[in-house]
Length: 511
Image (tube, rainbow, N blue to C red; front, top):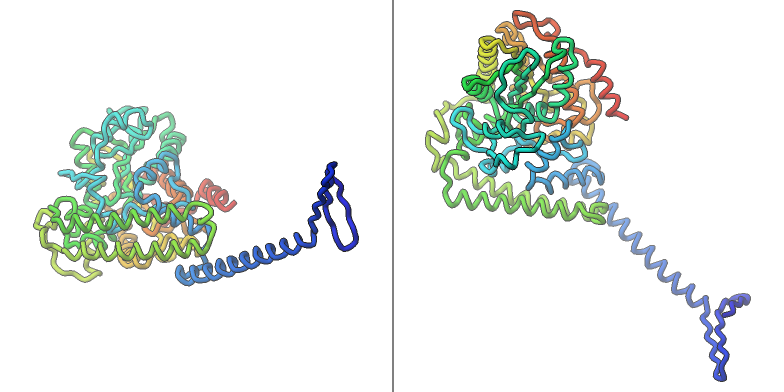
């Protein structure tokens, strides 16, 4: 082969030693023309795709009322795609301190409506405490570091330790009660609590055991019932920590009242105990179908290359909202069935019509009375009792939320903001009365007031790893110090300053 060049043209000359010699010449000027046309086509396609992507970005911004990002959209899809295996995802996340990362938030266990329709799959009715978790086979629990056979048998399987321990001077049994927030703190933050108390001067040399008796949806008087029930069976505890407040003022308003259930009956009681007619079963099936449809779409559009396209994200958003609309209409049908098949065992004592303010006042009164009774019961058994009012993002001024955290943490259509805005001021105002009754009460609503980093991971009340560590830090600060004999402590009159360790956590999160 010989490569020759001439002015104005390049060609390749092929010569063969034969009688019938053939010469093939390919003019590069022809190839250049083809390449130019091909390049123009590629540029036009790229320009068209770019314009479509920009338009899709703008439309998504209008629909979401904020500029979208690949990470935020992928975070939403991850939540929905995992919704059908929520328990498995929760188990995997809670095996390590901090739970799910902020980039993959999980729907709250206290989320209304759809969660209620699947409630009997994960929990069972209990004659004294309302409900507990479904018991798993002992073989499925045995051998797992984060599960205990004895705790599993009593309906609280997410415990490393058992339920019953004999009193020992070198051991400290800490029991944590409340709703799903308390379980998150005591399960994902268990190691932090145990290590922190064991390192404190007050409990130095003692083996600390943290037992979580909180479940998603628990609200007073369930904490009072749980403690009384297990103490009656012989449970020993040295320290009792109650973390509550949100469920007590929100769930009766958003769930019990719409279903016609007594304010103080356990969560979703009518669904747990009432017989379901074929129409209810049909509607449950339809809701589950739409949820599976949403999960399938989210999983599909989470895969590359679709996940990197704003146009594909726009298609996903439209399809997801369509499926969500069908699910919401089906849930409305389910609720519209009303009380037709529900009697006293499902609805409880009939409540007189009350204003929102009267309902809130009644809820706070019972919440406060239950805490006082818990304190009295604890003192009778020589147990230290600490009551913490949990933080919540809907409490005005409790945390600075940037646009990204606000999109995850605030849902004005959830019905949560109203009950929180009415209930939390009354609970915070009850602090003095609780302390005068001998309760060591600590208000944690402003625990994140100086934190700029993302803390909340859903639009209910749950927090990420940083949030768990900051809350645990405050709990350690209180329990490791203890209270005066009359149950009061001047330090608790206001939220204490962030400790040095908490400040370091915040600094690290900002890096």
